[in-house]
View 1 (cartoon, rainbow, N blue to C red):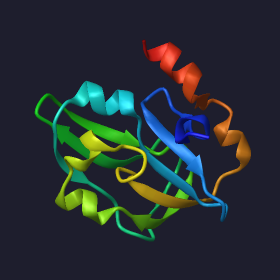
View 2: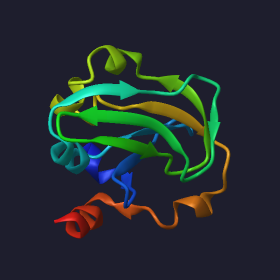
View 3: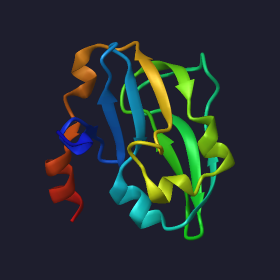
View 4: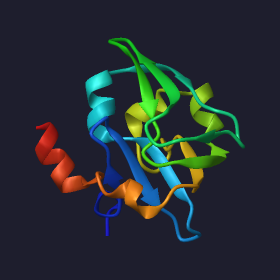
Length: 127
């Protein structure tokens, strides 16, 4: 099963993946990265910071644009992909395996995921 069969996506182009330990991995979709072009800067939050669904939790800049990245569900940051801050261009190469942004422990209820799209539906919506 590919990762795109397991993720859920937001209309603002973030993805969320439920991990085996009931935490979640969050990143940008391949479509978002394609639209941004060559990524040159990434700002990520500190471990321990909490965000509500819809909060801006990170920022990305490319040669084309700067963009906020929004939290798909409420949660506390438990891990940050610090390697990406040093080499943000990794996002252009691999958004799902090496290009994840943060891992969170959810602090909201499951209804927060009701408006998230399965990857295939997301792809149809953005194309």
